Image (cartoon, rainbow, N blue to C red; front, side, top):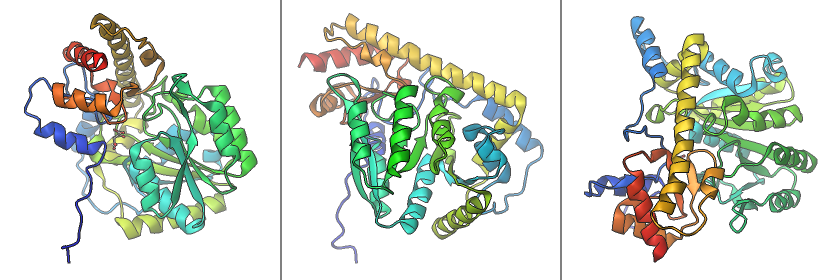
Length: 398
Ligand code: LMR
């Protein structure tokens, strides 16, 4: 049966974790996967999470099945966070939300639903995008193409190119957008540029699918959610995949959601019924613990305030690392202007290093980033940054 099965390539991001784990060098640094580490190089267990878990343990709950669409308190907290509790769409019950296995799970539920709804539709992702976007939508049966996004020469977003790609797309095309903290480039659209994108999406009858994996890592929770609200205010049907992996440092709990904004309450009920079929036929229903923790934090004012504070702490530390990286590279003898690193936002820096340079960083120094030149600045700290800067300076010298 398996004689002809070929060895699949390693995952371009998570595969690096496997290589990193097998690397015996003590000085190795993992800037591959998008994970935030604190200044001691440790994966944080947030205080708000600890306190929520302590509260949950005071009254340990039996572990029955959750509803197919997830824990109601969690789904409602997601709606309030993403759209605003007082927003018209939430107040008029026009949002269908299902708990999902991380942001990736939210994308997959949406992809499977869209495939049934409009099997001939094409999917457009940004050029470049998160590696798994293409694979996920292709595996859901879609033809996946790109819209222009990154302008390497200008070190920013090619907005005109992006708008032209969207204008050329057929009505019904699904457009996957990064709501904030673009992965991998770190370059986001300005509010005005978002307005232009929303207008074209509306005019062309495209289907916006926003991936919001990094809310709170850019400028703030509300600021990072602004793009979603622009689509909603334009009266568009919009898909939003949310992740709490990063913002709650709950990577392994797989806590995310898919929300679909519909034109009416009745439509939202019908859409929800279809999303539930996707969930039921894939993994039946979602797990309890992570959702219980996030719901407890978001629904308890003092824990919510603590979360916001801790998230701001992570955001601020990343920004400080960006500044230190620019200075450290200069100190290590890099003559190129690297100040673009502080103009990028979120967890990543798209460094502009070539595949060969990234591979040399890995083989000669044990510094792991993706082949595309992406480095996770959220994994830098005061102890490893000097070493990383010297390693980068060395490969840039050739
Ligand atoms: C990343 O891009 O590194 C993260 O989103 C983690 C992942 O699942 O790839």
